Picture 1 (cartoon, one colour):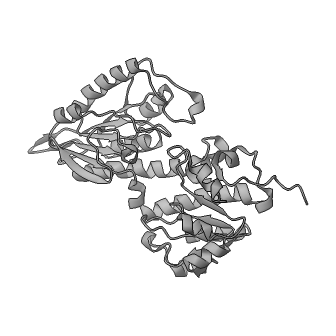
Picture 2 (cartoon, rainbow, N blue to C red; picture 1 turned 90 degrees about the vertical axis):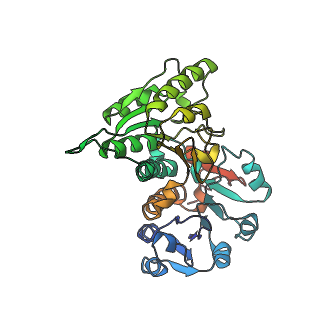
Length: 367
């Protein structure tokens, strides 16, 4: 079975790194890599060749690969060039684009959306969203430290004492928890808010104070994501976040609801009342932002507050991000395709949760 690794046009990351190409070869896969695919992540063609891969051009790769691997999906024209029976593994965002499966099916394309991995124990090693969220939380804190015009830790000198920075983290999922841990290591005092009471102990174990609003709606079937809240709860939440934000030096927002616009947690009037020089890092910028004044992929200053809208901070740590992605993809491929293309089980939870487009054939029982 041939796995083809595409070069990303707008992303510094690559979906497969040489060390994992060796694992692919050991598992019985042949790997071909588009020329220059890993250069932006500091993985070079010679490194892939030494790992057992073949270097080729994009057209040849599309025509010969059984599995086409990328972060951003290939174009419609490129998918039309793929060989019969091939599958695309990429991030199709089906929650935000519910029509994508029908669109791909109409084009005869079979695909697996890697950003739709079920959040189950067996799928943890394949979960690209969690892998990237951890990097995003870490990088968000370092970015905030670069923009904040003061120290993170308390500093005692002969010239006086500088108090520690006050951090507010909104959303205590993987990104939020990593942001808390990194902020504490840098010496900031941290408060964290989340509608999911289950994360309270995790927040506290990292040395942060958990900001709790009573009456949250929780749904165990939501796969670890937050869910839509009642209007009464949202009003209480907004007031408490407003009060906490006015005292914060840095706010990191991470709240996303699958398939919906990101909830507004920091309103314009809150930003207007915040301390001059404070910083907001909005990790939900691509889905509208948690701050009302966020502009996606931009750094703006409003009322003396720097607002950074960046949902792709992992792309700024491209070497490690690529390594984590490669392992996620490899674990998925080995699990789904390890017994051959003809033995992919459409009834499997992970397969069913990620597959979109052209229907999979019934699993062969032939020996």
